[in-house]
Length: 281
Length: 291
Image (cartoon, rainbow over all chains, first blue to last red; front, side, top):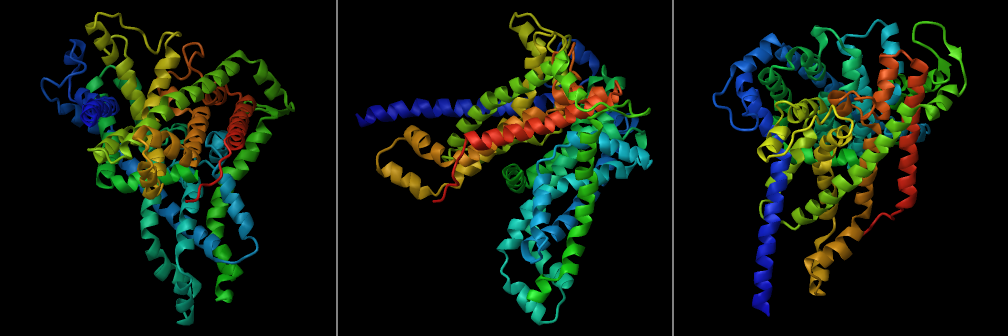
């Protein structure tokens, strides 16, 4: 009887691993396909080798994408925009969530409610009004045209994530700081903020991903070559490079690489950050 | 102590910068959207107040109704195509199976990719002449199709990448939920003689209902808001066959310069999301589980 059971379990285990591995292939193959065709020339693709390993690695595609198609420039823009958004939204979110979590002021309830309603506002609902606002301020097609809205929409999630962390800190920290004659701003900056660094790392990753990948605002508010981020740049590349698979593919790989590198370095933080984002949002 | 933490001036110095940015970028615009939606306006000329006519016209607009229907189809497809596999994989991986970490890492990769990249990638996969999908079909002796140009296939073809991309996200959300159940509950069930399938069905799933609700809300609301991928793949075409409300909103505003009508669609999307949010809250009432 017992033996029977054992022989029954084994094939099931094997089958399970086959299913898991097959799904892994389904999840990762499109990316491999991308890397492959970024290294091919059109002759190879049109003569039938779409799926397989390139015959000859065409590194020239990358040179072409980075310099002729300007993907290198878009990459720098994306890095700049994302860095500014992360730094400013982290600072602002830290300040607000500390105030909400710790300070006792009557208006606190409303401030908290204000940002929790914010969690529900989709970008679509503000697209046109923000567009008109930027147009009236002659701010369309500038870095700040996307930086400011990105900061705004990074805030609610970041704030709600941080509040929990501030609440978990013992009040004695501030007590002793105040007794030593430390003011509230210094206490906040010197004693409290260093303690919530892990939480800041998590929300920074979340903000990084949503900013880096954002498309609707970017394609609407940015047009000229100079300010294009990767998402806009690649959308604009399509017309010119539709038939040049290799260069297009190389551009897509360049756009993806920073995200994948960050993920492989910090996979644990990325995973927990993204889950936290969903659960709070 | 009280004096410090009750300091009103300090409080507002902490709060005001974020408050102002958020007010100007989110709350005021949403009110403006509501205001524009009652106007007939091409963005340049005079605004004419027409009350709720924009909304009444939406109900009669076939393209809009089709787009709303499509987004509901996507919501159902996401629930079936994302949540069921995600739950399966989460249950399996949470049992500390060999290679669990590697699987988890790989399954999550598509979630991180930009929709622009995924869209461009699938344009190459679906390409009728040289695409990977047709190459495989031809090798198998089947006929290739025009996946995005044919009205019959475009909906399925453009929804597939979305469903595919986020399975790993839901898997991870559910996995985290399962891992937060204390292990002595499982041990107790094992001692009582339950097998793994019984434990999954009778112990784990009931205990992670609140996490499942998060996933469900996320899948449904995400479907109703979808814009990026359809925009990259088809822009809603051919002949509105793959239209969703947000792509139609975008073309109404920026191609046809129908600012009023487009704003009505924007408000519709917001209200629809809120409606489904509250419906899910109401029908899947789960008490917060305490262990």
